[in-house]
Structures are given as C-alpha cells and as structure tokens.
Amino acid sequence: MRFDISPLHPVFAAEINGLDLRRVPDAAVLEDIEAAMNRYAVVVIRDQHLDDEQQLAFARAMGPLEPSVAVVDVHLQRLQHREFADISNLEVDGSIIKADDRRRMFNFGNLLWHSDSSFKATPAKHSMLHARVIPPEGGNTEFADMRAAWDALPLATRTLIEPLICDHSLIYSRALLGFDEFTEAERHEFTPVPQRLVRRHAGSGRRSIYLSSHIGLVRGWPRPEGMVLIRELMEHATQREFVYSHRWRPHDLVIWDNRCTMHRARPFDDQRYKRDMRRLTLEDSAPTLEQAA
Picture 1 (cartoon, rainbow, N blue to C red):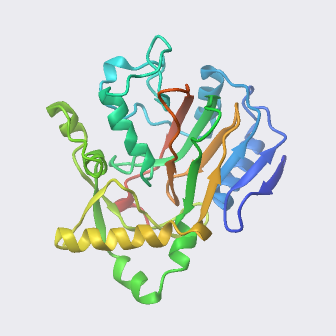
Picture 2: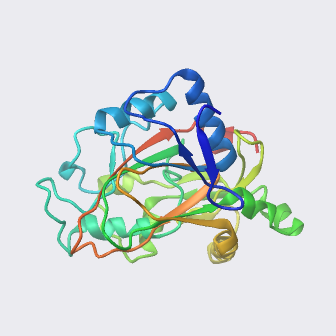
C-alpha cells in the first residue's frame, strides 16, 4: 500500500492516512484505494479540504458516476453539479430548511438502514461523502457489514434466502415513516426494481446479504411473510458486532461499498445546527440479476 491504513473495527472499516485528494492520485494509488475498499468496505480519509471540483475529479477517477440523484422537489437543488447528493439541511440561500418542509420529511428516510440506490435498476457501487460543515453533537453515520452478517447466518437460512429476489423502491422506505406525498412523476421515477437478496461481492469474492429499507416485497412470497423475513434479517445484520459508528470531523471523506454494507444517519438537532455534506456515488457495472450470485 502507498499509504498507511489502520482498522477501525474487528471485521471491517479502516482509516487511511497519508493522502491529499486535492490532486487526483496516480493509477497505482487508485488501485490501492480500490483494494482497501474490497478488504474493508468502509474507509475514512481525514482532513481532505476539497471543493466540489476536486471531489468530482477524484470520484470520476475511481469509476463512472451515477448521473443524477433521486430526490423530491429537484427544482430546489442547492448544488451546481447534478451528480451531487446534497446531504444537508440547507436551503439555496444557506438558511436551515423549515421543520415542515417536504424535503425534510423525505430525508428522514436517511435514518433508516439502507443501501444507496438499491432502488435503481443498476444500483450503486461506492458512495463518497464529504463533510464540509457538521453539527457539534449528534449526526453520526453507522455502517453494517453485510458480508460478516452472511457468514454468521445458519446454513438453513442461507439456503432459504440464496435464490430470493426482492423489489426495492424509495416509495417502500418512505412508507415506513408515513411519507406518501409523491407526485405522479416521482411515483413513475421510483417504480420498484428487482434485486438479488444474496450477492457475491466482486471485489472480495465473499457472499453478502443485499438488504435495505427500500425492500417492500419478496417475489413469490405473500407480502407479510416476506417482510417478516426481511425484518428478521435486518435485525440480525445490524447487531453491534457487525456495526461501525463513524463520528464525523470537518473535512472527513468517507467511502463505503453499497454492495456489501448498509448504513444509516443518526439524528441531530437539524433546526438548530447547520450541516453541509456532499455525496458522489459510483454506479455499479450491471443490475444484480445479471451478476454472478
């Protein structure tokens, strides 16, 4: 490795030191970062004083980006580049979004365990979230290792779930919170898509449970029975031994692999404190149904 790396958790997650990403690293360093992602699934790179163009340049060097983000009220987008997901509580003018704003209600879904863009036909590979402004308390992000969760399943459960296909949609995850205020155009955009419940993680060759709050149906199962199964798997996969909690510092860049982790934001006083975090997301190579199981 051409940088220092220190594990943050017994089974996954690590901190990288010795990088300055204001300039795109050379190909050998990019390969080492990819190797670290395949091993640890979550990497934390501290003290990265990036602007939008620098973050974009690094992300593009790592792979193809998702061309746009899935949000409501897209006409109120604060950031210039459409590839950025605005993980903030800020209006275009920099003020705090009001308590009853529809966008705030929609964004409460980030507090649920999920995998980014599992609701897209070709889902996400890596997410890259950069902290520009963080609240003084609260607002951690938790990550769960789905490879370790698979390894810990009984053989009978593995055999049961291995062939299953689930439908994913933002409509399903927001329904868990009572949010159903979608326009017809949004409902069309968020039409459910099928994903494997068990995947083989290409970078490590390990099996992984592909879970997310975006799941609303197990194909071929009565819906209540299927959702009980998903709930049981979620509870198993988010036990403390599989979870790393990241406490943010200004200028942290955290990269995670959506193919083999879930994550969730933790609450903070978003009507008192400002938070400005910006995410870019790499697109995976193909739909999960076309990938090796």
